[in-house]
Image (cartoon, rainbow, N blue to C red; front, side, top):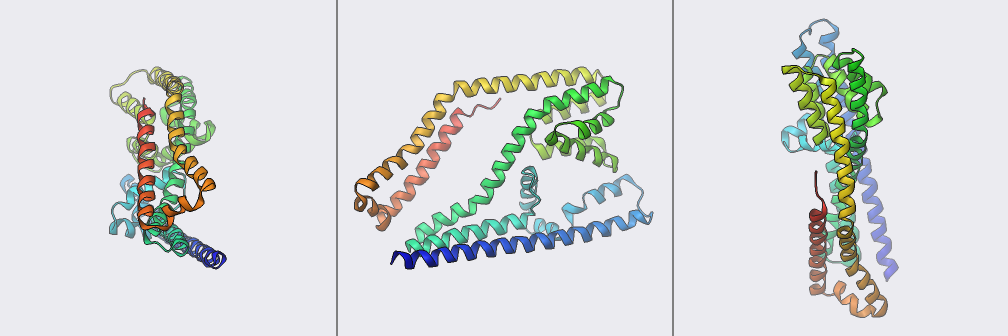
Length: 325
């Protein structure tokens, strides 16, 4: 009986996952074709000499955001524009519609699998929410790792920019040097800002675009320092030296805080693992006693509430020990 339940459940899960991936690939292919077509349409007036103003070139650079299927999706659901930025921060070339396809597909795949195995709508809802959260957690984890690497590489890039300015190079040329010779994560952002201002976007807007894409305090301070210096003047090299020193000190303080909050983190890990370990031990000692939580309706409700409260407790402890500086 168990094998007859497991086999259809596994087949449904595999079929749903493959269908989701196929739909996502088709969506990406359509988005790529639409993007190429839209960019070609925008480039044609430039090649023919009809577009010469910086504002028109600026519109050309922004064509990808407003044209094709992505533009249609963001017009129908305005919140998807922020989702596109979230995916870009995770260094993923997905469209918002692809992310939604993966979210809905994985949610249904895991939910239907659990429904066939447990036969409970409550567990179907829990599994569907967990499956739908998988793409978000994946992108969020990539975004977190990228930002961490960016923060570690940023002081070195500021030092490189400072040396270029002291050697007599203008700021834009120094940013080009960082794009060519800097650490990979920071170099990618500086290269995009450098290329945008070369294509006609005002320097201030290109710099603020880098701030929006990274969403880091250090980059925001860097942009403010550069923009203020361009307005009122001053020794930019000295300002950037002080900024690099400040960023390194923040890293030192952050490591010190991790040492001071180590006991709180270990407490959170222990409290989070304790119910799971105790439940597993009770399952080994008295299986029938524990299975009432999964076979009886009241037990299922209690398990769901326990999982929700456990997640809230872990997040609460994490918020207490996560001191941002």
